[in-house]
Length: 278
Image (cartoon, rainbow, N blue to C red; front, side, top):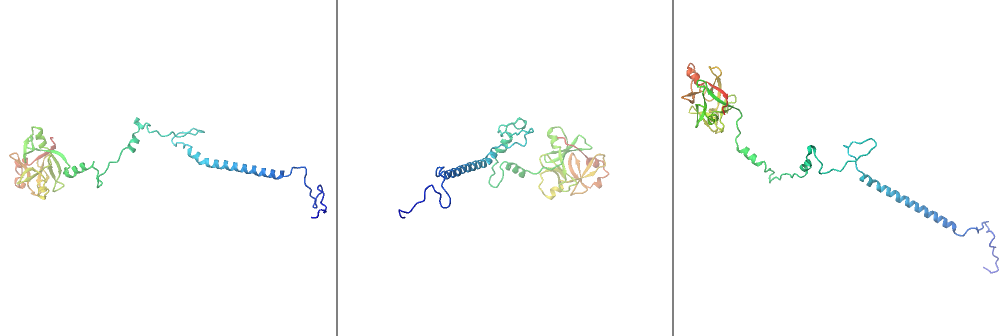
């Protein structure tokens, strides 16, 4: 620009009519705007931090808050909390910690290979090896014409003997059970597990060998006697033959029809079932 070009006066307005404000320090508007923006930023950050802290504290407070016990009685307007459980608290009946000890400290019994419980094996073994005992009623058999004498096991035979001792009472007491060969008849079992059977038409005590013949020989059916209150015992496999005593020996005597009119036969074959002597 040529040095001789005239410049507009400093204190004169521009062509658009705007004139600078000479009463204010230059740059204060920008500083004020910057300060307002910084203050707004700080306030926003503080509020955000406070909100985040409050949101994070909510679950932890809920987790730390004790839950009131359902069994604890509460007064209106009061909040109560369950006391922590104590392992030494008294159980009902004054017994301390029994239920806890039973449920937590009792170990399960180890089972050997195969799943068998060793504590049960002896019982199972004893049960399987022992023979089942017959069910029935203990009775003694008394003679009608010799009322002081009873069926009595002497050796292997059954005799009609007087009872004078505890051993005699035991050997004169029998378990009356259902007939081995016929359920509506009788069988007589002894205390040591034998049965009364006839062999060679003589009554004796023997072990049950499981045969059909033994079951028939040891089964006797009850029949009415001509003597009031007495019974007669007929053989299952020899119908018409009844147990009777001869010379105080129990035998299976035959042909009742032939001896029907004999008073001796009637009396010798009549017996009374009484309560067991033992």
